[in-house]
Structure formats: C-alpha cells, structure tokens
Length: 319
Image (cartoon, rainbow, N blue to C red; front, side, top):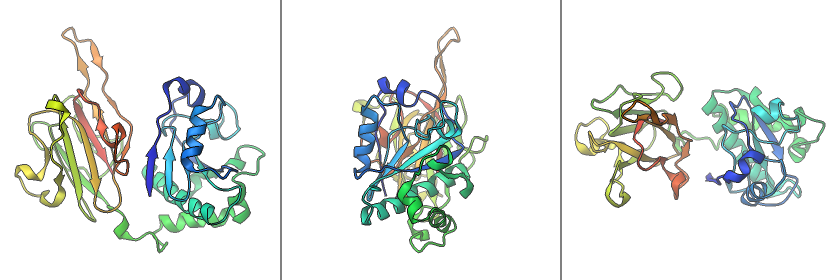
C-alpha cells in the first residue's frame, strides 16, 4: 500500500490544524464524492474552509495531509469535542458512486486503521464513525453496507484471520540498537519508556543496526557535515550479529544527523530525536525533540528520511 504525505502549508496551520493533539480514537468518514485521495487532500489543504482531516484513502493509495499529532475539523462536535480534538480522521474516497473503486478504498482504509491501532496499542473500540459525534449519516456508504461488517474486516485483519494478512507481508518484530561511544542494549519495542528507543539523550549516535523477523532491514545513514550531503551506502541486517563495519550503518564516533530505513517485506516506520544543543553560556539553542514519523514507503524528498541536516541525533525509534 502506497502512502504519500502532503505537508500542510504553514499559512494554513492556524486554520486547518491549530491545536496539538494526543489522539485517543479514529473517526471514519466517507467523502460523498468521487475524487481520488490526492485530489481530496489537495483541495482540503488549499481551500479557506475550516474543514480538515488526517488521511484520505482511495483504491490504490493513502494520502496524509495532517500529522497525527495535530487536530482536524471533521467531526462536527465543536472546538472542544472529542472527535475534532482527539480523533484521527480517515476519509474513504469514491463513496458517492460506490462500486469496485469504493470497495477497494474501504479495504485500504482497513489496512490503515489496523496500522494505527497497532501503533497506539488500541482495540477495536477506538474505531468510531462521524455519526457518533453529530446527527449526520456518515460514513454513508459504509453504513449502508453495514458498520458491523466494516468492524469485522478490521478485527479479521487485527487477529490475522484475513487471508490477505499473511505473515510474509510484514516485517514482524524489529530489533535494533545504537552506538554513542559504546553499543547500547538491544531495543525490541517502540514507546515512551527508557527502553522504548535506541540511544541516550545528550549523546550523539554514530552507529545503528537493526534486524526483523521476516525479510531484511536496510539502514542508510548521513553523517553530520558530509561533503555534498552524500549518504553512506545502505547496510543490510544480514550481518547484524557480526562486529565488522558492514554490520552497522554509520561511522563510529562521527555523529549521524539523518537516517533512512526500509525492509524487503512490509514496511518500517521510524523517527529520530534531535540532540539538545547549548551555547557557551548554557543557553539552549537547539531544543531536544522527537521529529515526525517517517514511513519507508515514502521514497523521495525530505519525508523519505528521519532527521534534519546539521542536527545531531541522540534517539531512534522504529517498528
């Protein structure tokens, strides 16, 4: 499944997604239109309406227009409503005419919803519909076809009961570790706890290695101050358990500022933490912070890698 991210223009943030958000749910919509996902996102980000949503899904790809940590205006429950202020909004395309395009779009929306549920550790009860927040028959065609049917599609995918959800289609558990002067313990998960990321705040990472249950992981690194912004050659996980220079990505004791990660099966999501930097007087000039998630299915542009040129990283997460 192809994921394309479209950045919300800075001048539209105050209108489209003015508040930071810790999501607690998913809100499902139908577009009541026959346009593609890219067309829906492009129109949403370009107009002057106080209407916004995080994802649009059509018959062949997912397009994201708002980051999951920003709110959207989609549920009709006001500026403090749970739908608008805590819900990740998903618009399923081609619902006006229905047919094969809509059926495929709905199936792709299930894939996205399952991915979100797994990332946040949520259950099926976190999947809600627009109708739950206001008196509007939405998602109209999904409701016509059966809401419980749609939830069952999600449950089947979550529980690996769907024939389309084969183990070969996913990386499985990813194991990874970082070097910041010494190789740190392996990480097997991805959360806010001390062992939920690779690295140590305040110590720049210069080496990274990873492996997965199914297939191979590839990691490509960019070294701080690299001539012509050249990237190092990708390193495969096949030599993960070795100790030579081809078993990890990076140049030990030379700080990394960016990384790209992908897999031979499924996909990888990853992000980096920028190392805090102070001036000689102890004033913070670079705030330590986690950058947005990157999806390995995004192949080009600044959204294909995690990090910012010129800023050391001291933490990495992937799943």
